[in-house]
Length: 164
Image (cartoon, rainbow, N blue to C red):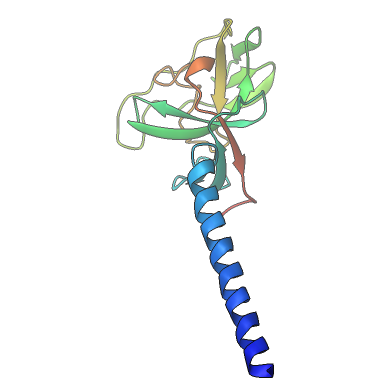
């Protein structure tokens, strides 16, 4: 009798584990359009691992993902300027967004391509200024990325911890 009871418990445990496995597989399939894991291999941000929520709209100070034709790939940046914010360039050539430092544009990209610094302006309706804290980061300091149409942003990106 004990062997039979023990055998019945094992069968239930196996069935329960199989059910959990099936549920996990279904969850991944159902949620894969809503949640992605993204790895950034660049040093433009201190974080390298992110959760991407493509259906969520990011806000100012949050991170987002956008396709850049100039880099021919997706980039992750922080939104630091929105419609109505002031972009200025000081005497040293540093770009400021609402009087906060956004970095000094460099004349050349790492591959030698010429980069064009952003001009002073007020961010128009429907656009955002994307930022990277790395001194050589490619962001809205350069007209090659420029101000990005909010509608082009591909959701909210949440950094996982600091560094790699």
